[in-house]
Image 1: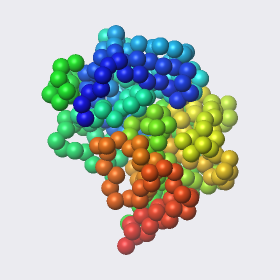
Image 2: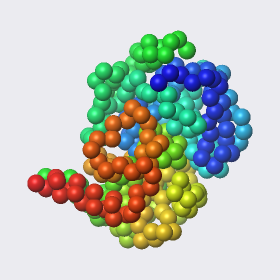
Image 3: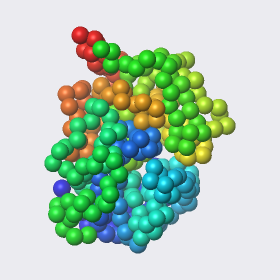
Length: 156
Length: 159
């Protein structure tokens, strides 16, 4: 599916927090880590790294929960203060990046993932498409995922 | 080989402050592709485990935050999350007071919780393969459809 026109908008369930993504993301992938399984309540979550300056909060109040990832890095998870929908992460080690949760976009049907990470903890009934860019654990770099996204959609 | 784990099983939120015990086999496991579930999950669907309320030992109320929403079906649903980290653990609805729906990803060992039915596929993501399981464009017509499909999946594992 081709990329939509930007900006694209999204928000939480109750509508208090609205945001705008002003430019295409660097990539989209599925994360099968157990934290994403817990937070999503599902088999895996989709992740969409974007440049910090392209994610603009338009309204509402957010609450922040900070967690320490397996790597030891600190990540802030940003949710609507009212309804609790998680919308993006702030990786404190990479302040120039945000990890948007694309399910919170008003339309994310264009965001087909180009890869999978943490496949070693995937649900046994989930099949991983071997043609994608896949990692058993944390990728040493996300560049190959970004390259696959660029190859499909052009440079961000 | 049984497709079920040995019960009781446990689940918990991301930070560990809120945990629960499921003491007996669930009534059904299904995937919901409605926009609400996609938004909360940030994925193509959420996986729900329908269980009898009496089979669950819930976290203390003080560890929980609850919110109410109206589902795509129009029904009022109450959701329960960890008050600290915000992980949603289960939801419940007035029209089915004897059951609650656990969020499968919150189980400590969720691998057995394979959806037997897909609901709200009219908003499914086009690239997600749903397999051969029964699919419904909107809400599942009755809980019995879910229970029967889950039972059939379990029975197939016994042969």
